[in-house]
Length: 231
Image (cartoon, rainbow, N blue to C red; front, side):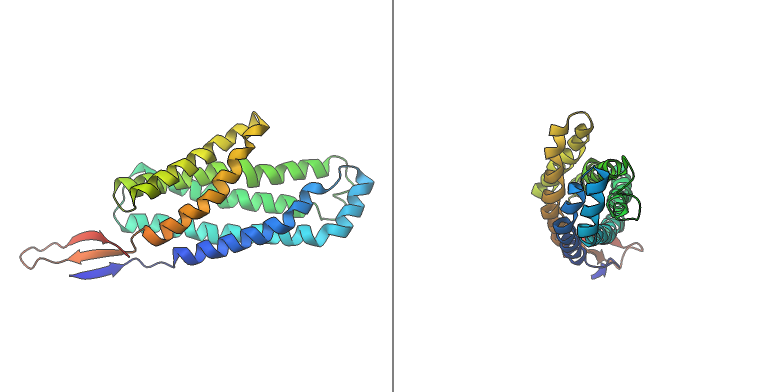
Protein backbone atom coordinates (compact mmCIF):
# COMPACT_ATOMS: atom_id res chain seq x y z
CA UNK A 1 0.00 0.00 0.00
CA UNK A 2 1.25 3.48 -0.86
CA UNK A 3 -0.07 7.05 -0.87
CA UNK A 4 -0.11 9.20 -3.97
CA UNK A 5 -0.15 12.90 -3.10
CA UNK A 6 -1.86 15.53 -5.22
CA UNK A 7 0.74 17.75 -6.90
CA UNK A 8 -0.44 21.15 -5.75
CA UNK A 9 0.36 23.91 -3.26
CA UNK A 10 -1.12 24.31 0.21
CA UNK A 11 -4.70 25.59 0.25
CA UNK A 12 -4.23 26.97 3.75
CA UNK A 13 -1.29 29.11 2.63
CA UNK A 14 -3.33 30.78 -0.11
CA UNK A 15 -6.26 31.25 2.27
CA UNK A 16 -4.00 33.17 4.66
CA UNK A 17 -2.53 35.32 1.90
CA UNK A 18 -6.00 36.06 0.49
CA UNK A 19 -7.37 37.09 3.88
CA UNK A 20 -4.36 39.29 4.62
CA UNK A 21 -4.68 41.13 1.29
CA UNK A 22 -8.45 41.42 1.67
CA UNK A 23 -8.09 43.05 5.10
CA UNK A 24 -5.33 45.35 3.85
CA UNK A 25 -7.45 46.39 0.88
CA UNK A 26 -10.60 46.90 2.92
CA UNK A 27 -8.82 49.16 5.38
CA UNK A 28 -7.86 51.53 2.55
CA UNK A 29 -10.66 51.22 0.02
CA UNK A 30 -13.32 52.90 2.16
CA UNK A 31 -11.90 56.23 0.99
CA UNK A 32 -12.92 55.43 -2.58
CA UNK A 33 -16.59 55.40 -1.62
CA UNK A 34 -16.37 58.76 0.15
CA UNK A 35 -15.23 60.72 -2.89
CA UNK A 36 -17.73 63.61 -3.28
CA UNK A 37 -19.71 63.78 -6.52
CA UNK A 38 -19.18 67.53 -6.75
CA UNK A 39 -16.29 68.02 -9.20
CA UNK A 40 -14.40 70.67 -7.22
CA UNK A 41 -14.66 68.75 -3.96
CA UNK A 42 -13.82 65.45 -5.67
CA UNK A 43 -10.56 66.82 -7.11
CA UNK A 44 -9.47 68.04 -3.67
CA UNK A 45 -10.52 64.78 -1.99
CA UNK A 46 -8.65 62.59 -4.48
CA UNK A 47 -5.58 64.80 -4.19
CA UNK A 48 -5.61 64.22 -0.43
CA UNK A 49 -6.63 60.55 -0.36
CA UNK A 50 -5.38 59.31 -3.72
CA UNK A 51 -2.68 57.06 -2.33
CA UNK A 52 -5.06 55.38 0.11
CA UNK A 53 -7.36 54.57 -2.81
CA UNK A 54 -4.45 53.34 -4.92
CA UNK A 55 -3.12 51.06 -2.18
CA UNK A 56 -6.59 49.73 -1.44
CA UNK A 57 -7.15 48.96 -5.12
CA UNK A 58 -3.73 47.34 -5.34
CA UNK A 59 -4.42 45.04 -2.39
CA UNK A 60 -7.89 44.15 -3.67
CA UNK A 61 -6.46 43.31 -7.09
CA UNK A 62 -3.74 41.29 -5.39
CA UNK A 63 -6.26 39.36 -3.27
CA UNK A 64 -7.86 38.00 -6.46
CA UNK A 65 -4.66 36.10 -7.26
CA UNK A 66 -4.38 33.84 -4.18
CA UNK A 67 -8.16 33.40 -4.23
CA UNK A 68 -8.04 32.29 -7.86
CA UNK A 69 -5.18 29.88 -7.12
CA UNK A 70 -7.08 28.49 -4.11
CA UNK A 71 -10.07 27.85 -6.36
CA UNK A 72 -7.99 26.28 -9.13
CA UNK A 73 -6.16 23.98 -6.73
CA UNK A 74 -9.41 22.94 -5.02
CA UNK A 75 -11.00 21.97 -8.33
CA UNK A 76 -7.83 20.19 -9.45
CA UNK A 77 -7.79 18.23 -6.20
CA UNK A 78 -11.44 17.20 -6.62
CA UNK A 79 -10.61 15.86 -10.07
CA UNK A 80 -7.56 14.05 -8.69
CA UNK A 81 -9.76 12.43 -6.04
CA UNK A 82 -12.03 11.09 -8.76
CA UNK A 83 -14.89 13.58 -8.78
CA UNK A 84 -16.76 13.49 -12.09
CA UNK A 85 -19.93 15.52 -11.54
CA UNK A 86 -21.67 18.70 -12.66
CA UNK A 87 -20.77 20.33 -9.35
CA UNK A 88 -17.12 20.35 -10.34
CA UNK A 89 -17.94 22.35 -13.48
CA UNK A 90 -20.15 24.73 -11.48
CA UNK A 91 -17.23 25.29 -9.13
CA UNK A 92 -15.00 26.01 -12.13
CA UNK A 93 -17.45 28.66 -13.36
CA UNK A 94 -17.42 30.34 -9.97
CA UNK A 95 -13.66 29.98 -9.75
CA UNK A 96 -13.27 32.01 -12.93
CA UNK A 97 -15.94 34.62 -12.22
CA UNK A 98 -15.16 35.53 -8.59
CA UNK A 99 -11.53 36.65 -9.11
CA UNK A 100 -12.58 38.52 -12.27
CA UNK A 101 -15.21 40.45 -10.28
CA UNK A 102 -12.59 41.40 -7.68
CA UNK A 103 -10.28 42.62 -10.42
CA UNK A 104 -13.08 44.66 -12.00
CA UNK A 105 -13.85 46.27 -8.63
CA UNK A 106 -10.19 47.08 -8.00
CA UNK A 107 -9.65 48.62 -11.43
CA UNK A 108 -12.83 50.70 -11.12
CA UNK A 109 -11.81 52.20 -7.76
CA UNK A 110 -8.22 52.73 -8.94
CA UNK A 111 -9.60 54.64 -11.94
CA UNK A 112 -10.93 57.28 -9.54
CA UNK A 113 -7.34 58.44 -9.05
CA UNK A 114 -6.56 58.86 -12.74
CA UNK A 115 -6.02 62.44 -13.99
CA UNK A 116 -9.19 64.15 -15.15
CA UNK A 117 -11.60 61.53 -13.78
CA UNK A 118 -12.62 63.31 -10.58
CA UNK A 119 -13.47 66.51 -12.44
CA UNK A 120 -15.56 64.74 -15.10
CA UNK A 121 -19.29 65.02 -14.33
CA UNK A 122 -20.83 61.66 -13.48
CA UNK A 123 -17.57 59.73 -13.62
CA UNK A 124 -17.08 59.44 -9.85
CA UNK A 125 -20.55 58.04 -9.23
CA UNK A 126 -20.28 55.58 -12.12
CA UNK A 127 -16.92 54.23 -11.00
CA UNK A 128 -18.04 53.97 -7.37
CA UNK A 129 -21.10 52.01 -8.48
CA UNK A 130 -18.98 49.72 -10.66
CA UNK A 131 -16.53 49.16 -7.82
CA UNK A 132 -19.33 48.18 -5.46
CA UNK A 133 -21.15 46.03 -8.01
CA UNK A 134 -18.04 44.03 -8.88
CA UNK A 135 -16.75 43.59 -5.33
CA UNK A 136 -20.25 43.20 -3.85
CA UNK A 137 -23.04 41.18 -5.49
CA UNK A 138 -21.00 40.26 -8.57
CA UNK A 139 -18.24 38.71 -6.48
CA UNK A 140 -20.62 37.09 -3.98
CA UNK A 141 -22.72 35.36 -6.66
CA UNK A 142 -19.71 33.72 -8.34
CA UNK A 143 -18.15 32.90 -4.96
CA UNK A 144 -21.39 31.16 -4.03
CA UNK A 145 -21.29 29.07 -7.20
CA UNK A 146 -17.75 27.95 -6.44
CA UNK A 147 -18.52 27.08 -2.82
CA UNK A 148 -21.72 25.24 -3.77
CA UNK A 149 -19.91 23.19 -6.40
CA UNK A 150 -17.11 22.13 -4.08
CA UNK A 151 -19.37 21.55 -1.07
CA UNK A 152 -21.96 19.41 -2.85
CA UNK A 153 -19.49 17.23 -4.72
CA UNK A 154 -17.14 16.98 -1.74
CA UNK A 155 -20.02 16.01 0.52
CA UNK A 156 -21.64 13.51 -1.84
CA UNK A 157 -18.30 11.84 -2.53
CA UNK A 158 -17.66 11.81 1.25
CA UNK A 159 -14.44 13.77 0.86
CA UNK A 160 -15.39 16.40 3.47
CA UNK A 161 -17.42 16.26 6.72
CA UNK A 162 -21.15 16.83 6.52
CA UNK A 163 -20.95 19.97 8.67
CA UNK A 164 -18.52 21.52 6.23
CA UNK A 165 -20.78 20.66 3.32
CA UNK A 166 -23.77 22.31 5.00
CA UNK A 167 -21.73 25.35 6.01
CA UNK A 168 -20.75 25.70 2.37
CA UNK A 169 -24.37 25.46 1.28
CA UNK A 170 -25.38 28.24 3.71
CA UNK A 171 -22.57 30.49 2.45
CA UNK A 172 -23.43 29.67 -1.16
CA UNK A 173 -27.09 30.52 -0.53
CA UNK A 174 -26.06 33.89 0.94
CA UNK A 175 -23.94 34.51 -2.13
CA UNK A 176 -26.78 33.81 -4.53
CA UNK A 177 -29.28 35.82 -2.47
CA UNK A 178 -26.95 38.82 -2.66
CA UNK A 179 -28.03 39.10 -6.32
CA UNK A 180 -31.29 40.53 -4.94
CA UNK A 181 -29.30 43.67 -4.19
CA UNK A 182 -30.04 44.65 -7.78
CA UNK A 183 -33.74 44.73 -6.89
CA UNK A 184 -33.60 45.88 -3.27
CA UNK A 185 -30.48 47.39 -1.74
CA UNK A 186 -31.42 45.92 1.66
CA UNK A 187 -30.41 42.52 0.28
CA UNK A 188 -26.83 43.79 0.41
CA UNK A 189 -26.64 42.35 3.93
CA UNK A 190 -26.11 38.95 2.32
CA UNK A 191 -22.83 40.16 0.79
CA UNK A 192 -20.73 40.31 4.00
CA UNK A 193 -22.17 36.95 5.06
CA UNK A 194 -20.89 35.34 1.87
CA UNK A 195 -17.59 37.22 1.91
CA UNK A 196 -16.57 36.70 5.56
CA UNK A 197 -18.16 33.37 6.52
CA UNK A 198 -16.60 31.92 3.38
CA UNK A 199 -13.21 32.38 5.06
CA UNK A 200 -14.20 29.85 7.73
CA UNK A 201 -15.29 27.48 4.95
CA UNK A 202 -12.01 27.98 3.09
CA UNK A 203 -10.04 27.11 6.22
CA UNK A 204 -12.19 24.01 6.67
CA UNK A 205 -11.61 22.90 3.06
CA UNK A 206 -7.87 23.54 3.47
CA UNK A 207 -7.75 21.20 6.46
CA UNK A 208 -10.33 18.57 5.54
CA UNK A 209 -10.22 18.02 1.77
CA UNK A 210 -7.94 14.98 1.25
CA UNK A 211 -4.64 15.63 -0.47
CA UNK A 212 -3.60 11.99 -0.96
CA UNK A 213 -5.00 8.84 -2.51
CA UNK A 214 -4.49 5.48 -0.88
CA UNK A 215 -3.02 3.22 -3.54
CA UNK A 216 -3.87 -0.37 -2.68
CA UNK A 217 -2.19 -2.98 -4.86
CA UNK A 218 -3.52 -6.50 -4.94
CA UNK A 219 -0.85 -8.80 -6.40
CA UNK A 220 -3.57 -11.10 -7.70
CA UNK A 221 -5.20 -8.28 -9.67
CA UNK A 222 -3.60 -6.33 -12.50
CA UNK A 223 -5.47 -3.13 -11.62
CA UNK A 224 -4.83 -1.04 -8.52
CA UNK A 225 -7.62 0.34 -6.38
CA UNK A 226 -7.44 4.06 -5.63
CA UNK A 227 -9.18 5.50 -2.59
CA UNK A 228 -9.03 8.98 -1.04
CA UNK A 229 -6.98 9.19 2.11
CA UNK A 230 -7.15 11.74 4.89
CA UNK A 231 -4.41 14.35 5.05
